[in-house]
Structure formats: structure tokens, C-alpha cells
Amino acid sequence: MSPLPYRALKRIVKPVFLVLLALCFSGCASVVDSKHYSKYAQLESMKRAYVVHDPGSTLGCDNAAEEALTARGLKVTSGYIKDKPADTDFYVEVVDRWQWDVAMFLASLDIRFVDNATGDLIAEGIFRQSTFFHTFPDQKQKTFEVISSIYNSQPALK
Image (cartoon, rainbow, N blue to C red; front, side, top):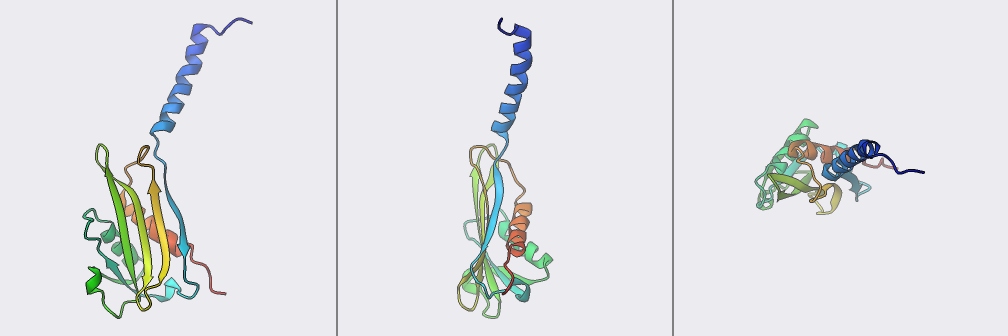
């Protein structure tokens, strides 16, 4: 059996190389399944939320969380944790982590819903992506996706 001619080898190697290159430069990012910690707190019955601003964040995920909750029909206010009103149903902690590449990119996003009366964690949604092979996701879209995953994965009361 003779080895493949150079032209045939070139036709095979080039497409394989391009596929491998595409895999290497595609980002690995996902919204992880949300977790619900309270069997008794039904998010649909909660109508007032308070979004806690992360003092270290200036890139807007907390603003997007406020917008996403408002779009779901909630009355939403925001500010520092010390200014949280007593009559809100739950408060939202938004922790976004950014890294620098050619530009800043959202590396991770953790959104936690906390019962205002008890301080118990109601639910948590997470977005993660690789910091080596990554994309430059739209922070507003990812925030909306994480909040949707929290609402969509809520278990039904038994």
C-alpha cells in the first residue's frame, strides 16, 4: 500500500486543522441549572424585590437584574444592603466577575434570591464560562437568562 499523495493529504489536513482551530477558539459558556433551597417560598407569590448593588461592580449586571425582575411584573427597588426596606419580599444579590482579555468580558455571574424576613437563601442561578476559551457575552442577556432559569426551574409545591 502506498502512502497518500501530497495533494490528498493536504485536502484532509486543512479541513481537520480548521475544525480543530474552531473548537479551540469557541467559548465554553453556560447557564448552570438553578437551585432552589426553600420548598415553601413560591416566587410567583412574591411581588416586591430589592436588588443589592455590589459596590465593586460598575458594569451593570445589577441594573439588568432590576430590569429583568421588573419585566416579570415585580416592584423592584435597589441600592446598598444597609438601605434595604423591611417590607420587601426578597432581596437579590448579584455577583458578577469580569476579566480582561482584548476587552473586559463576563467570566461568571451568580444571582441569589434571599428571603427578606428570614435571611434564608431561596434560590440561586449561575452563569460560568472558561476564562481561557471564552466568548464576550452580552451581560444583560446573560442576566436575563440566569433569572429566567431561576423562575423556570422552581419546583412545584406538593
